[in-house]
Image (cartoon, rainbow, N blue to C red; front, side, top):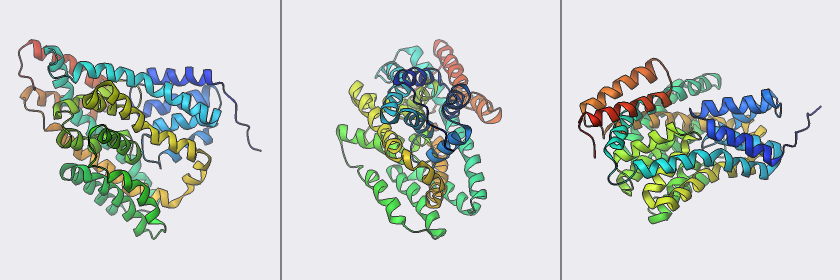
Amino acid sequence: MTRPTPRVSLGTIAREWGRIGVTGFGGPPVHIALLRALCVREREWMDETEFEDALSAVNLLPGPASTQLALYAAWFLRGVPGALVAAATFILPGTVAIVLLSALFVQPHPPLLVLGAAAAMGAVVPVVALQAARVLAGPSWSRVSEGGGSRWRWTTYVLAGALGALWLGPWLVVVILLAGLAEVVVRRSDGVVSLFTPLGVVSGLGAVGGLGALVVEALKVGALSYGGGFVIIPLMQHDTVTVHHWMTGVQFSNAVALGQITPGPVVQTVAVVGYAAAGYLGAALATAFAFSPSLLFVVAGGPHFARLRANQRAQQFLSGAGAASIGAIGGSALTLATPLHHLWQWGVTVVALGWLVGLRRSTVVALVVAAAIGVVAALAGAPLPH
């Protein structure tokens, strides 16, 4: 007998999802844990099987999985209005915080202490990318082994993604898509073109300029980031720094760092890029268009999540595309290290490597401590990037 779905008030969704949006420091693992505690253990709105099925389904979709899980849980409880309320309350707190910090860090002539803090946090960001790739690689490798895939192909996709992040700039999206398609073809599934066509449209719009370019960049992150929110780094870095010149390499590293020390989804880093490109209007546009695919996927696809989870073609595509995305995140660590020109910054990087990769400790703590070290370095007269 099917358990009836509880009907939860929009006020309750606003309060509970807002609480997670304000306290959710630490990225996707923390968000998923908070959602599980709320929906399964405390309120019993979903049972463990329903929650795990939803988590499996959103992991097959492009975009930030923990955000999609939050939206789906609210949709499950109260339909489209619930998903809309959850989107606002879960995403906005972190976005407001990161935009306010952008006004301080992403400006032509920041104060000396801000320059020091930014220089030190930027030295940690390459290690954050490496750590993200490491965390994602474990489950992806296990899925390949359990799903009948080839570890040799998985390794090839990872290497292709890493090389794409280093050399191909905006064409990295094509590498990710082709890796997914290659895995589908190798396993002799049908309907490959139907997977490629709607996604390829977004990747082919790189020539747009102005606010249109910002919208395209945000959509690309929201619609094509296989492997989670950290794929924002390799997908946006080249266009943001080299093509459109919205930010310097140092400022982009700062944007990634700000995305880590604020609560909420990692993808909200696009708000910093939007702010650099077009002020507060740009931040609002970038945020809206980066998260709109996730909302659309949940609202339109929620009733079909059970079938999606069982769809072999979708799992095969994710196996290839996700592996390439992991490689791209790892490869982006080298490009993120490019703006590090001073010896003391490399010292911070080495310490962060031991803390994050060796000891596997908190990213937020690493960035906050690094910022404090940067302030001290600035006061001591250490050389700073400009």
